[in-house]
Image (cartoon, rainbow, N blue to C red):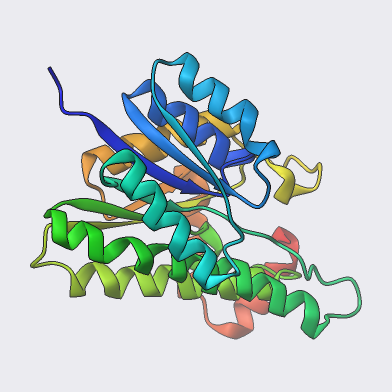
Amino acid sequence: MAARRTALITGASRGIGRALAEALAGRGYDVALVARTASALEDVAASVEAAGRRAFVRPADVRDVDAIAAAVKDASAALEGLDVVVANAGVARGRWSGKLTYEDCADVIDVNVRGAVATLLAALPGMLERGRGTLVGISSVVAYRGVPKLAAYSGSKAFLSSFLDVLRVDLRKTPVRVVDVRPGYVATDLLEGRRPPGTVDAATAARRIVRGVERGAPIVTFPWHLAALMRLLRCMPPALYDRIAPRIA
């Protein structure tokens, strides 16, 4: 019999988070579901349980460091350890429309940066103690180079990918792995109804993420053509990038 596996996902009530919960349950994981409201997680929990796996529901706001630490601790106790922890919760407020407010930028940073770091660092000691585990951060292809009109979001994802990059190196002599996920366009609320070319649905994104995590890939990025474009943009000098970038915004 295969060993029972466990996972925790923040932002699990919808989008990539929900799809990941369902994909992991389908792969035999018991799943801890974290989001701001318990009621939003009930349907997700039902999907996990329908796959024959256990769901642990814990409402918590990733912006509250103490609350997320308690959620990770309680989930670990309930599921007897966490094999995979996914810092997925994210927002994309602060889209440029002639002005950019500090409040919008601060909210993006609180969720995408502080929330992700709080989640991953809360899980790390337990993984080191158990002698196994995988920390996963959901970043974005904009980590390669920022996208116009999304200064706060682009900056937050650049931070997260750099953080994960260094954390992976720092943990290289431990049994804990680090995976940086950099998806392109995924059909979630973050797109605000838009569907740019190359957009994939959340279920497809989740399958690619799970496959990469189980394969042990340090970076999981898709679709390949958008990732390649963003890598190319990263190499462009500012003068050229400034002329081209507005066309991809």
